[in-house]
Length: 632
Image (tube, rainbow, N blue to C red; front, side, top):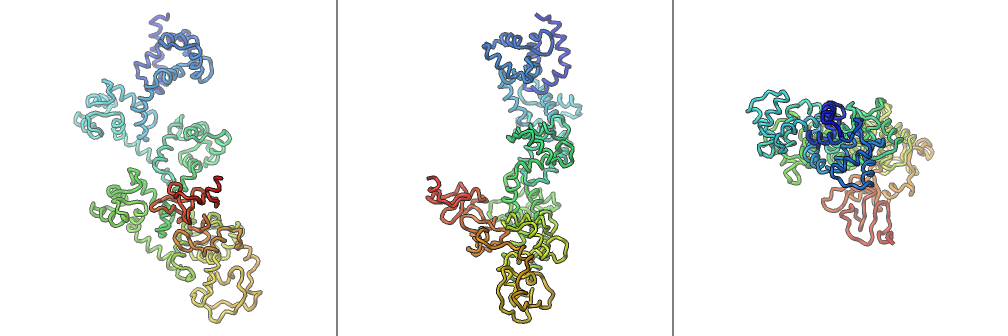
């Protein structure tokens, strides 16, 4: 037996040791008295005072605890919790035995009462929460799980906060959400948040504000990422190293090899520090979850472009941020109170009646709330200069191109703004290459540069709006041919045009803008024949180009809206041509945007998986074989 005085001396020394502090911080489900009793048990069998117990000592300890375990069971438990495989259980390893083998209900209750509520208060780090838990427990004298006015008064005093009884009662009433006259831990954290407002300000500045540059992420996404970043930034450096990044990815179910992990870190580490700062971490998350950007485009940006082409991509991204910021309940719509808050933040003070009238004006579906497209109508009303600018910059110049109708021009505006990736008001060769690739056009880089040279009138290496229309005339010969008509004001004809064989593509002289004087009319077939360089810049119209071949058979009309489909916006599915934005489930009121991988076609209509009618023959995904035949 170990003398009592020796145990007391060991206890006194241990309570001030790092090991005790670590145990108290990591195993907060045990209160002080419980932790002390566990330590006394551990110390009795740590006969050499080494801070460890071996298997034999562990077996004796279990026996004294009344745990009738067989030898095989003891060995399995010992080996399971001997994390460093030293053949001994340290104090922390022994606490893990207590946590998971003998007191799992304490862990569950602790998570429910403390850890889960704390997840809603991202402004506090782990040390803050640990301190609040200790304080809450220390002053919850009756262990009721709540703090009353008397206990709160003592807690204020211990924190050095001078407050009168009336002020304490007022603070309790303000944060007592359920009105029972006491504060549970969630309400207590709400009180702490009000006492330390700089914590919330730091959270906004360091995490939430930078995250707004990644509009593909929802509030829920950002919350998950902040929680993971803080949790696994174990050294509290404000950065994530490769080891910590591995833990983050594992927690998200994204386990990767060491080599892959290294490559991911290097690719996102823009300042080459060897660690990931918060914005670099978000950039990496954007790469790991590419579907987030697709969702942003399909549900937010593309519908905005289609209905409100007066807004730029930068405008729409800004509006997405505002919409999400003031959609405080994450319902996907903004009610009158949320809209009033937004208008106030914008400096557009409005009375309740004015807000109500504004909602009534834009609320097309009469839901009483403002959805995304209705929100864009609000923005249109608030920014009338956008309408004027749109008219001046886009619609007025487009009047020169009489070979295009209004629908054509709207499609071109949407495309131009969508692929002006940097919001510069023009499209460079990189953006043009991206647009052609996404549109399924078979132009290589050299051919794209050739096209750009033909329409780049000011030789600045980019395509402005009017030059973009010239480009559209180049790659849509049927429309460009109409431009040669005497009715066209762009290329006036002062004399009849001689009959000549129709070239494979329109001549550069016809497409490029000219002075008011009439252009020279070629007098021979040789003069009319396009140059080899110009031929090289064109895509041959062959059956191997399925999108264009199908478009030629269908008259370039969208199966969804019936309007003209241009190559840059075309998508072919189920032997039909579609605008990408029109390729949606045709079930009434179904909002799902279809892709080539998830659609089903039945009787000439396309559906999502949920609304596909029962049919003996359908087209699914990339297939065109009847479903029944494929099953056979």
